Image (cartoon, rainbow, N blue to C red; front, side, top):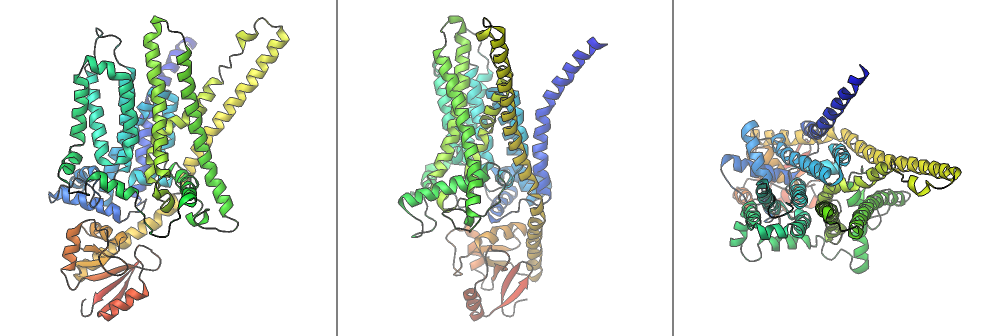
Length: 596
């Protein structure tokens, strides 16, 4: 009886290991679907723009290559959402279902990448961590504003395919050559092309994956030229919309010029600091705000409570210490992972060169190089954000750091490695010829050191999971306000339709959201606080249609909502133009005199 229990336990253990990853991926998607069903995170006008693009695609009205008004960021989310619009009808929920498709790709790719590079335990712990949903981890994953979730999906897929190709190449030309390598090479090119079309945030991961391929596959490419040909063919196919546009783009409107202009754009001319003060503000914006929140910390301090952005007596120092401590922990984990990767590469370099170890050593080189290049991609992502003006002027735009989530397995690896090593203290042989008292003392010290290792590693992992769990639970109180605001938009659209108000002017953060909620029954044109055309108009036909209507209304948010607040100068101007004020829940509407 007892003998039969052992095989049964082993079978149950294997079944549990096989079901753990699918269960965690289902949990990840279910948590995000649950938040979306509850109306959180709240939407905005930029997500409304993506919804309108999907609506136009679903109707066959338009086939955009890029996000409206941003000619370097692909429209992939809109095309996937258009499918869900056909299935379930146009809605915010249908729009966000498209994000779950990309998120599923990310989860599958990240698990396989982590398992390939660091083992099953790290892979499962990565899924445990990323299945949770702190605010600024979940928001770029669920809001359909373009680029963020595709960076996760295509960046992790590119690293996975490159690492697999590097580690599994045939030993000699005569060895059997699996045809799936042809498919993998084509798939890498396709993923890289789609990533480039989607958003250039993915470039650090594509570059590091390409370096990995060149380092370990160039001999194979020389033997089988069809491999690089298929890779380039996949790249051309995936990036075809990007290539097609740039072949015909006017001067200055090509994707590179648009991206560089946005990257270096000064949002506040004449105001930002320069020189050393600017660099200090960039560092403060990155490490005292953007990095902690982008990597899972629950926000507890406002931006204006942090050094270089404001000062609140009794709070600023504690906020800086709290946020800075999180960033320091992140950098320590990153440095530890970098140290382990470099140490393993050094040990390989110093190891013997026996012929029978040649294949195993080549695979080991590929493994540790893959780990190193994954870290390098994360470091490039962090560095490129830190040197940008965005870090100083808009540190709340931490979605540009979304790629750091791909590096999650590398950050979990050091404590897991420490935990695993604690079971192999390696004391025995060095003391086997020593007196028994010395041997017992060394063994005791080894056990104490091993327990300390396990305690330290377990504490680090537990704190990470608890921090992400706390961040997930902290979202719950915000659900009601987000849902209430969305209902105000729905009620506003219904009221305007009932009154026959088809055209309105409003601010950037209202217009496309309102137009999408109304399914284009109300068309909104974006204006600035001076009641003239805004510099950024996502879809020019809307402005042309509204400006052609002399009875178009003006819409503002009320005092409690800062999307487009009414100023006294605006009220005076509209009164002089014979407009009358109508107060609505959450909004202030100005109608022409005599209009319903």
